[in-house]
Image (cartoon, rainbow, N blue to C red):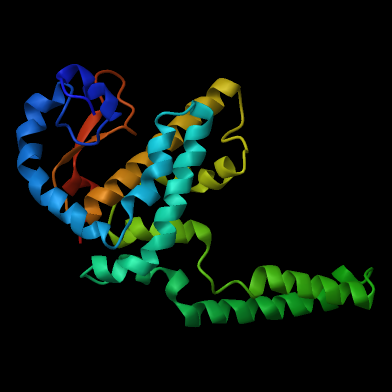
Length: 253
């Protein structure tokens, strides 16, 4: 960043209300006092999490065209989730919130798998499949078993993507959940919604901002930052983006 107040815009919407905008007058002093501890923790966490590698696609997206932004943010999301299992033992001191998910209950999932296998075996033997040859029935059974049963006990990608935020107790609202679901579509070049091109672009921008803020809150939470941040996923009817206290973005025990 160049020196001089006129160049603060090159910070590309900094997440903390510290360098630019009217919010600085209300929150700047608070953020200033929190920055040294935040920076120290950021450096400590950098030994476990390579923030540059995880977030570079997101930073690139801010310079790119709107059509590419959601896909690039999704790459950062995938990178963050993929590295989380390797580093969360060193990051978290409390028990993992997401371990309570039913996807972690292997005995339960094995029971579901056994039930499904019984239903599948009965289905290929009953009159519904009478028109099939025995070879076709066997193939149908093996294919469905592979698709439905064999992979049942593995955590799905959608749950894997939620784990960093659930473990850090970062709240996921409906918009966040939708954005996490749509990231796969964006990565594969699909449309983000039905309707006009303008509607699709508007939703794409909304999902991008949601993922962008989720990743921002991940960094803030993993570095124990408790102060205010600018919520670029907010959609105020008038005025500036909302400023939210990080404590309000965390699920209370």
